[in-house]
Length: 217
Image 1 (spheres, rainbow, N blue to C red):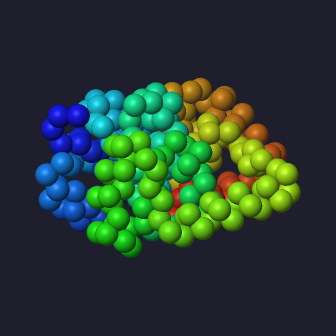
Image 2 (spheres, rainbow, N blue to C red):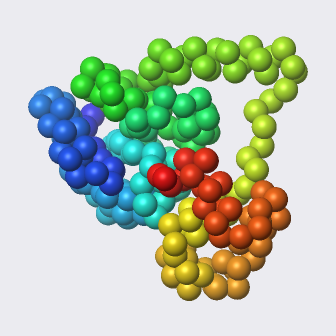
Image 3 (cartoon, one colour):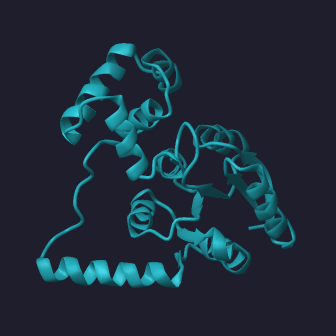
């Protein structure tokens, strides 16, 4: 490709975005062309700016980085995606792979790993930090020993979107407007979530969302 790699950077903390941008813009082959403060804004900016690479934080308002990655992988299959996170967590790591991410980079070592992760993604090569490689190998061996595949998701991607917005305190009307669905559909998703997860009310849904990493406590 000609010219530097055009990057969309999404993180809800402006100071984090500033630091990451300094790392990236100091490289002649990388340039940040857009910044987003949440997952929904990241999707909108990706469609508008058509970047080569999206770097997404996991824990963001409205839509998480994983939710945004799933949508971008579906609608913009040529876009490379990196997850940049503070979570050294096997669950999030595997969710990132399932969401279509090319790599998983920890914020604690971003100054060391992020530039190489960007270049690897543009070469269509995966970038995994050492702990993630260990987790991947262990998971493969465990599943092989049991003769099992990866377990199916407990809830659908749409139900996860509704769950996150419920936990953030949005009303059914607000959720309907954000997701472009009817209030009745929101209520149906909420009822399905309660039934599938064995929960009773909004408070328990919020606690579940925190445990699942959809929102920060």
